[in-house]
Length: 439
Image (cartoon, rainbow, N blue to C red; front, side, top):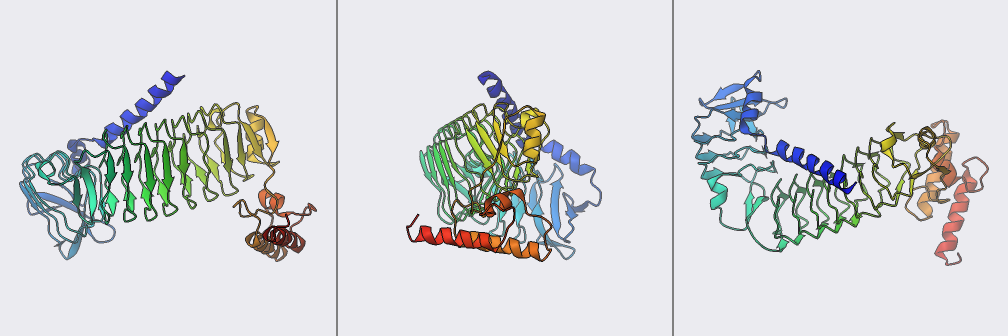
């Protein structure tokens, strides 16, 4: 089984790597057939986007200098697209105006004569490997190659304990990829984005704290960091990309941000040492293969906000004893492999969880949420009483037709089959007694 898992993960990694290194010819072929593309200065092609802004798309192989204008026909030049100048072996100089805010991946990849580049502070978004394989980046002096709005695009140092300079706004895609020296990294709060493949394959990286201030972790950011043991992700993080931690086989502790909306495809696939993880109550979707082959995972609880569980989400989670699904209408992909065969499914009756259990001969038990804890924060307090009063008011006024199974189970304190003012009073009483130390 272990060999099969390793093979699967290797194939996935290989495919992701191939996608990353798409040659410039493919970009060019795709763009040659694009309509409404125009030629500027005899060697640079551009398009006009829906916002009336200029996007530089590609260039002729004969281009030697790219002096990109700040505007064309009164429209600002704001973007250089993926692979625009990739593989232009005669290109030696590039000047980018301060109207440009985005440079796509591989924009100047393998421009083997490119020695002069001016990237202004206006550039706030940079794709993977924009200058990889150029003399400019080889000759750059300093450990951190920083361009645009203080974005790191490459690391040339050899330190084991990396401290990213304060003020850096983003870690570009592939910046530390396959760096075998790094053991730890300190990321300042100024970093808003951790790019795709930023730390991919950093086999000796053992821990990482994603600081308050970071908003986005992109696809494959930490994939196959095989020594990574713990990740603490600040609540400021709004999204974590697919495959972000795939193959992190040593990962034992993950703290997810409180407001995360989705666990993307294969985010923790192959994290074989991950035994416990708290899914935030805001998560609405568990993507395909999200926890596939997390062989140590023992229990999962999905809140009433969970809307869907995609195919193979928990395939190969052989020690997953129980999964609790509090939304009675949560979509569960209709495949036996979605949830491991020995997992006890806990939910309400009737519910999609019960139907899935019956369809695939799984043990099903009724869910018993904590009485009075309507907001699922593990406490009984005033906010829960307010929530109950809000439900009662909406139902009594006819604003809602029914009350979901979780709210009824957790909020019906006297178990009379209704949500009423008395239930809110009971919650307040419990809260008062706990606050006074009486219970």
